[in-house]
Image (cartoon, rainbow, N blue to C red; front, top):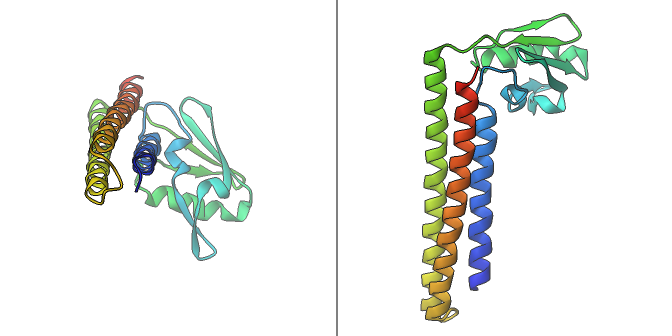
Length: 186
């Protein structure tokens, strides 16, 4: 593997790790209604699990309410069931055409738990990024042993990998801090 290939692989994997964090943080509840709370839900329709986004439009017309409009009104019961079994602490209310979910205000204890979860997710992402760095460094070492990289190329690759690590860890920290702030605000 050339140094460029190693760096491309490392950067791609680190980007995926941060992307996973971004989507996980979107599912963490804040005091405001956010369609991201239910976006990741899967609904069992016709024997298969289908993302709710493919079955309905999800919006937040008010700061304390999420509205789900199914494309097929026959799927309302299944969508309601998926929301209730997801253990999000949300209570869907249906009128036959759409589902409304009122978002209750968060208590101080729930907010602290949510912030703790944000920290966990952030730390998991940073560990994943460091593991990717380790893999990239090993690949650079292997490249030098296999004589496809010179010693200088190996050292340059390791330096670049470290720079990528710093960049992506800082992105993870920024995402986590922003979500923590949103959870703690009213």
